[in-house]
Length: 374
Ligand SMILES: Cc1cc2nc3c(=O)[nH]c(=O)nc-3n(C[C@H](O)[C@H](O)[C@H](O)COP(=O)(O)O)c2cc1C
Image (cartoon, rainbow, N blue to C red; front, side, top):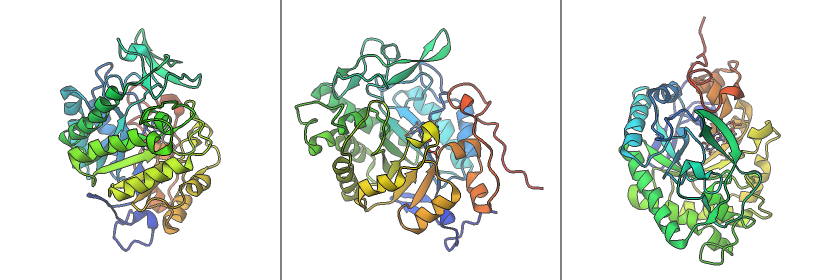
C-alpha cells in the first residue's frame, strides 16, 4: 500500500510543499501531449477528464502542453486555454482530478516556429528570427487524419507582438485558475518559442530580446512576470531543458542563460523549477541528467523537479541526495495510472505503446490497467 505519512522512509512518498501547492508525494506526472482534444477548437473532452482522474494519485499532475493562443498551435488536436469553451472543457477535467483527490497544473505553451501555416490561417509561425530548421515538424490534419509535416518558414516576431504574447501568458494563467487548475507550468523547454529566444543559434535579434544572455532570457522572464502579476508566484512553475538537442536547438554554452533563469526564478519565489532531460524520449538513451546538473551548478534555490527516463531507484537516489525534490515520470505514468503505488510497492509496470501516444481514442489512453490485487 502507498503510505503517505510525512515520516515515510521512502523518499518518493514524502510530502512536498511547492509554493502554495501541497503535494502528498514526489512522484509527478510529466506533461504529455496526447492529442485528443477537439480540433481545431482545442476543447478538452470527457475522455481527457477520465485519463487525468485515473492519474490523480500523482503528487502533482502537469497537464499536456496547452496553447495560449491560436498562433501558439503547432500540433492538431492539442488543447488551448484561450477561449470560454476551452476553459469550460478544462473545468470538467480539473473537477474530475480534484474529486479523485489529485492536483493539476496547466502547462502553458507557445510552439513558435515548430508550427504550420494551416494551424493558424493568415499568419506564418513566429520565432525569435526567421531562421527555419529542417528538424522542426508540425502535426496537421489532412482529410481528418493526422500528418507530420515540415514546419512552415517562420517570421521574426515584432517587439509589439512580444508584448501582446507576454500578455497572453498572463491571460492564459488567469484562465487556468478560472478552469479550476491548481496552478500553471510555463513551458520554456523542448525548443519551443521561449527556448527559441534563449538559444543563440536560433536568436539573431539585435533588439532588447537578442544578443547577450540577459536579452535572450528576457522573453521568458517577461512571460513569468506577466503570469505572476495575474496569479502570484506560489502557483507557478517553469520547465526548462538546458541540453535539449532537437527542433534545431544547438546551444554551445547553455549554462549562463539557464543558471540566470534559475536564480531569477528563485528570487521570485516561484513554486518550482522543472528541469527536463527530454532527449531521452527519442531513444530511451542514457540519461544526460548528470551533465544537466553540472550545467545548472546548483543555481536554483527553489523546489526542483527532475525528469527523463527515471526509474524508482534513480528517483529515490536523486531525492535522497538533494539533487531533486520530486521526479516527473512521463512514459511510465502514461502506461501506469497507479504509478506511485507501483513504485512504492515495487510492483511490475505496464509497458507504454508508442503507437497510441498521439491521437486516437481510449485505446492506449484510458485502458492501461491498474494493479490488480489478488
Ligand atoms: C507522448 C509524449 C508527449 C510529450 N508531451 C510533452 C509536453 O506536452 N510538454 C513537455 O514539456 N514535454 C512533453 N514530453 C516530454 C516528457 O514530458 C518527458 O520529458 C519525456 O517523456 C522524458 O521523460 P520519461 O522518460 O519519464 O518519459 C512528451 C513526451 C512524450 C513521450
